[in-house]
Image (tube, rainbow, N blue to C red):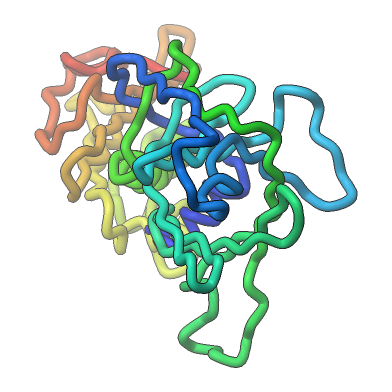
Length: 288
């Protein structure tokens, strides 16, 4: 499972967003430079781009954080994608910006329209002397705090839930796909399929049969009565995850055909497998 600090680092490292919940378009009004007498706030409000010193991003590609009035913070993936909404606050006594990106992240002005941000939980508890804290460099490019009207907005909690779900589902995709390929190779040699999940785990489950030690999915293998179709079923042990089914069948010419299926919505129910075919169960779709 991804740790909050690691996921926050991925967010700031500009990885793509995996999920967005479409909401009504949000547009934040332009800042009135004369309405707020706090200079630090005026230095902060606006559009900031993430950059790496010594490099230049093509126009419209740099990742953006928008510090908006009322403590709203928006992260924009460029050139398209969702907007992640979080919050910010300002410690005026120390000129420190405090934000929430899944873990506490602080920023400090490092020059005119420049800021450096770092994660407070970056220092390892196992190695407190390791102070190699990742620094995110940012520059203010405008005072514009408007949000693109055509972008869906996802709340920070939903963003992290989606990242965790994606990581967990990736495990099942990897194992089920590997077992499909293992069954095809096995049939080519024997010819018969392997129905013993313990034997399969030793071959494709990693060192020590990690497939059977998964905290995210339970894996089952079923062989049809005639032995011509073998199915691998991955049922999630956490809510909000899709189930996966891998099927390998023997065709009329004696070759094997593999099918990879995923449920159309999160489910923990064992599917009914169509008899005599390698087709996907009801409420599942075939995917590459």
